Amino acid sequence: MSTINIAIDGPAGAGKSTIAKMVSAKLGYIYVDTGALYRTIALYITENNIADEDIEKALPAADVSLRFVDGTQRVYLGDRDVSGLIRTPEISMAASRTSAIPAVREYLFDTQQKIARENNVIMDGRDIGTVVLPNADVKIFLTASAEERANRRYKELAEKPDCPSYEEILSDIIKRDEQDMNRAVSPLKQADDAVLVDTTKLDLETSAEEIIRIIREKTE
Image 1 (cartoon, rainbow, N blue to C red):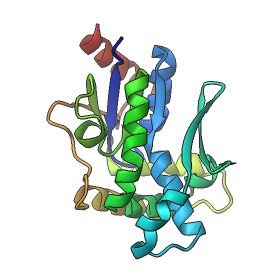
Image 2 (image 1 turned 90 degrees about the vertical axis):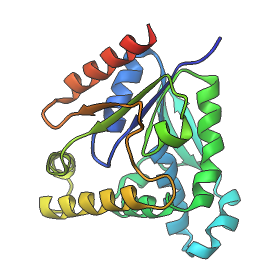
Image 3 (image 1 turned 90 degrees about the horizontal axis):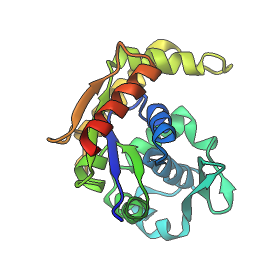
Image 4 (image 1 turned 60 degrees about the vertical axis):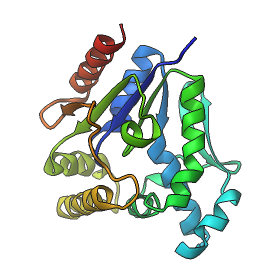
């Protein structure tokens, strides 16, 4: 029996992960957060002070894996659950930089495709519909204005004592967009056959419902 693969791409802070989790739970698919894999590589590189020129030969020792615990995806570095450690602004910027390195993308490419071959998945990232799953059954490009994405991230971090200012978050998002769209390897862009979904004026529930509608329309 063939599997159904859903690719969701879009810029940082568009709500891809949160919305993809909601949709996968409602449809009974496995959610694959590819950004978590890149963040984990960035954490590994940062913690071990690995220079860019040494990254390729250091990758085999990284031992990055996804595990599904009680239906929730957790990401591991060796035997250590690093799901919380990879969500800092520092690791976000490091992940954008390291994800542009061809050796890193090649290292994680096989892992992502194997999961998609064996399961009905919703996979989100920057180049899922264009590179990782070019034959996905449904492709969605999820976006929102930079200002709205910064506002959402600020609200998310507001309770933390070291929360950056809205202006700092907006600056980081604009910088991240620039990096992701202009990198030489697998830049962020909308696939020709992807459906554009702009969530600037939509809440999470409405965004999830719209994506479910698109998926059902294209797969049923």
